[in-house]
Length: 65
Image (cartoon, rainbow, N blue to C red; front, side, top):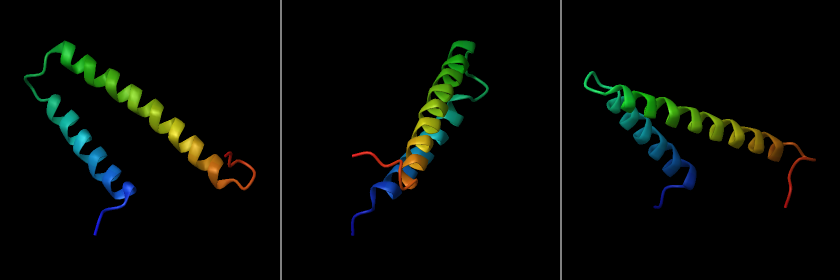
């Protein structure tokens, strides 16, 4: 049986966040740490946008085709 797109996304996001956490180990340079911060900020913005679009889709008048 094939996993649903939501299950696959959950797994991929968890793996990516674990990789980001690993990138912040004690040997990380300042540039690497700044890259993690930049990446996290971009992900937070994309997550906020996706949440907003999903909430609008749940609103009976908000769904657009």
